[in-house]
Image (cartoon, rainbow, N blue to C red; front, side):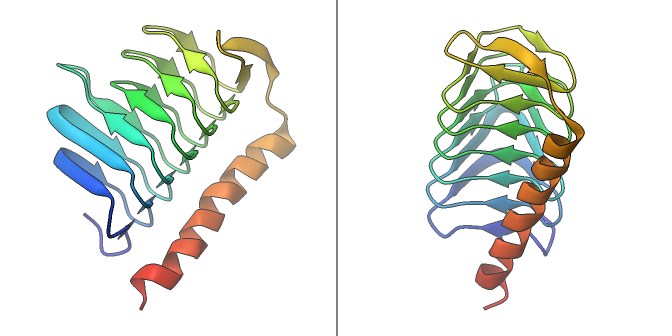
Length: 157
């Protein structure tokens, strides 16, 4: 784990988990890498109450500058760089989410789905609504950087 990683005191990181520099794992988040690996990219943040679990022979890869919103659940999936997974999302095994995507709060992405790059996805059935705009792509990056800046007040104490 890099020196610049913030892991909250009550977060739980178990097994084969690699966390990139300037990433943050927030309060009550659980990362379970007992059965396969989990990789969290640089400047990514796993917010409060999230569960990230590698499946049997199904690693979980979270790219760089990714925001995983509060209470989301990710199981053995891939999230591309600069994507945002909204609060309360459920992302199933073998799902592949492209870069620069927004998965709206509460969306469910069923196992083995492939979400193309720059997709905005919403609803319990995980429907692709439209392409993400350049302004939204910039906002995703800003969100990741904002959580990095917020984490500084914790690990610099």
